[in-house]
Length: 242
Image (cartoon, rainbow, N blue to C red):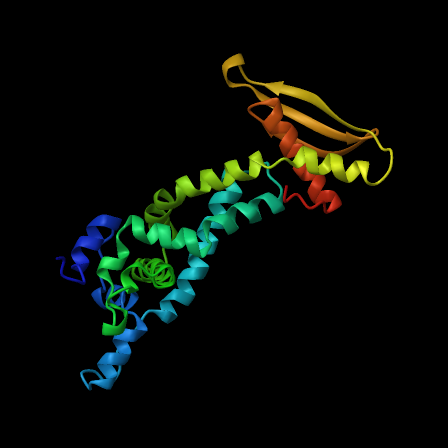
């Protein structure tokens, strides 16, 4: 049976970062239940735990994720970026990221949390955010160093969230909206193609009668049409949960 918590040095090796200040990573891994037990039993008058670091880590996570998505999906509208980010920084995803590095095995938990705390999604989510803050502070506020650890952990989820957004049927949502609002004619036109045959990029405009209401680019015409339709959906405030 494994002895918990695992040594911090093992976590440092996993995340590729060695802390100069060992106390800050210990604080990031300390749950409030452990700190409270220490105080109650008189072992420590005050034992730091990770809630303050969690607060900072939430902002560090949001900024790094937002910058990465903003740069990666440079042709996508704000609504698309917001939905991709929301899918990646949700509680479920953060707990998944924590499990990828076996973060639960390093936590300092009170006896009441030992049985389920190391797999508790909320505890893992909070600890992961605290870990990001610890790296950020220990590295003298370096977003680059945090990103070096964070982005490889979350890249797959960003790709999946992006695919889910692209695969939503925005064309159908837009068509239903147009049909329910009169006899206007909706059409899609390929206005440009770039690149060699094996790596083409298509530019599509969606038009309502003769007015351009959305534009999109993609590796296939379908992908470009969906992105154009999404831009139009955002313009007309169309709900696309279909």
